[in-house]
Every structure is written in structure tokens, then in C-alpha cells.
Length: 229
Length: 80
Image (spheres, rainbow over the protein chains, first blue to last red):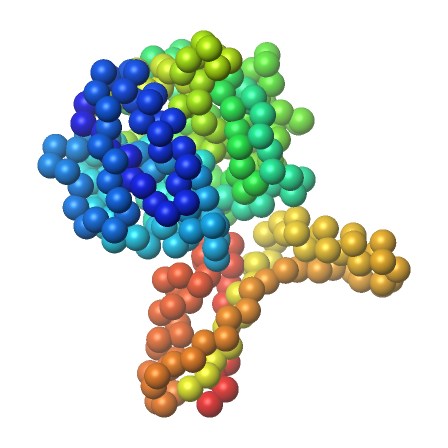
């Protein structure tokens, strides 16, 4: 798999995701600066990593989404290429028009940084093929603006087309209530594009790929991508 | 010419920051505040002196960057 991680000023999870990709696929991804206008030939997967691009100025991800490289990322996605946006990368993806909706301030106004359970909604995508449908996984979250919002019509479409990737849940897989930590509409933690080749998610699977740091539930996402691409 | 752009949350979009500000006002003894909605304000200087051109530029900047029209609406005034 030829993976590329885009580096924006203020990204800070690019090494974590590069490590997760290398562990899964055996090859380190290329790191591409946001000021470039083309992706390396043969790119299979583009990752928009977490962090605080441009210090979250204006709106989270808003400035990064207008970076020169993003035209190439949009073209890659339009060709059916895989794109994974994690945390700030998810915020960048919605601001860039790669995914619908927007991430707003957590309902309780707190920066949330802890382990978090998610329910895997479907396993027939390149991102979730190594999980079981309905499986509960434990990853972690670290965000102040992860409160997913979309208008009623968009939400109806997302749900109708099965485009919710993950929902916040408790350890028993129960969705809703206190398990919805940031107030996201319909407990949404991640969404797919119309053609399921773009995934945006607030939680960090890349930080749970090594038993030495508390769990490996994120590893299957990268293993699945390594197989798929 | 100078212009002022105001970006506000659309009606119905939750504003937890506005709610927190409203709560803080209450605890400061500022009573009778029924609602607070937080927004953004941009003072912009444009090279053009043609109002029609300025309006087109302002609309473009709002649509492309200053507002996310999923949850925000915008308005602008040209000060001349």
C-alpha cells in the first residue's frame, strides 16, 4: 500500500499514524507537505492526521482545507482513492467538502481526552473489513470540537445510505446517553463519503495499535487498509 | 474601501459557548439575559472603490472561507 500522510502546520499526530501504517503494511508512508500541489504517483491512501492545524484559527480545519495540496486530495478521492481523516483531519475533510456536516464545540465545552468505546456500524468497507459488524472497540479521543452536526436532510441521507462508520457507545456497546461524550448528533463518531472511500472520524485508532500503550483495537483499521489497497 | 462582515450561527444550531456566556452573565449579577448567541466579526479593507466589485468580493470570501454555511450565515456592510 502506498500511503501518504499530509503534514499541515500544527499537525501533531502524523508520526503516530505513520507508525500505525508501517506496523500494518510493512512500509512507512510518505509525508507530504501541505504546500505541494500533487500527490506522489501511485498513491493509494491519503491520511489527514490529527493536531491543531493553523492553531484552529477561524474554524477547526478551515485554513488547512484551503491548502494547495487539497485540490489533489479531492481529485484523488473523486477517482475513488482512499482518504482517512482523523480528528483534525476529519475537521479538515468536512471543511474541504470531502464529507458532509461539521464538527462543533463539545456540548460540555470541555477538551475531552480519554479512552472511548465505539460501535463499528458496518464491516464491508476498506476501513473496517477486519472488524465485525456491531463490534465494540476501545480507542481514544482527544478533542475540543468533535460535536458532529448535520442538517436534518443530510442526516437522513447519511443514515439511509448507511454512511455512519462509528458511534460512541459504552463498554457493552450501548449507544446513547452518557456514552455520547461530546453531544454529536445521532452519536456519530465517524462518517463515510457517498462511495465509502473517504472516512472521517474524531477518535484516534492510530494510538491503539500497540499493547504496550494500552490496547490494539485500532490496529485492525490499518491492517484492513493495508489489505484493501 | 472598508467593510464589516458578521458571521452568526443559524437559528436552531446549538451554541454551547453562548450558553456558557449567558450563565456567566447570570453569575455576575447581570440579570434578565434571555439568550446569548456568539458570532464573529471581520473588518476588511478592499483595494477597490467600486461598490459592486466590493460586494462580489465580499460574497466570495464569505462563501469560500469566512462562513461555513452548514451552520453559519453571514452579512456584510460596506462602509465606503
